[in-house]
Amino acid sequence: MTGVDYEFSNDFHPAYGVGWTHIFEQSIVVVLLFLLLCVFFSGGIYAVLTQVPKSNYRAIFWANSAQYFWKILRLSLFFLVIHSLVFALFALLFYAVVNGELQNEGVISTALKIVLPCYYLVALFFFVWQDYSKYFLVTAPKKWIISTLVESFRFLRTHLINVYFLYLINMLFWGVLVFINYRITLLIDIES
Image (cartoon, rainbow, N blue to C red; front, side):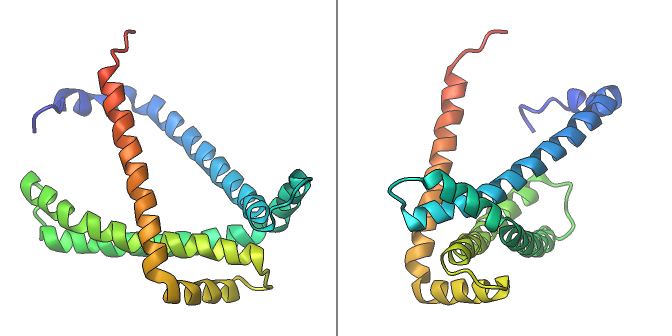
């Protein structure tokens, strides 16, 4: 494959493996803290967006962030399990398409062109479901998250085409922004 420095990649782990493991372990801690903060702030963000207070929105934000933290955390863990199962299903599908030929780059890239868009479209549904479950959890609080999941699924069942299409446009717009950022970084000559 052109553009890949195999010598560097083969020598990287034996030479720098010890330092890399420390960086990797610390990054896991930072990612977990970030996810916990996102879960904490979700309740406050949804509450402020749904209640639209004229003043004193900070008190509503902080109170609802604390109030809905554990429910949104359970909801997030539930969807983490669902996303893991969907990913495992598509990983098995990828392996079935490749048919065990992991040495051939052409077969791998062809299989990825087939499996990745399908995985993206299926996983996007579960992201939509997760976001609407958070919304229904904050707007109509229930004792159990299962009732919130059922209520948001009923909403998606009746409004799936509109909601899914808007979410798809949102994700495609995000991809365009990432691509533009990538192209700009290629144009800027960074001197060290």
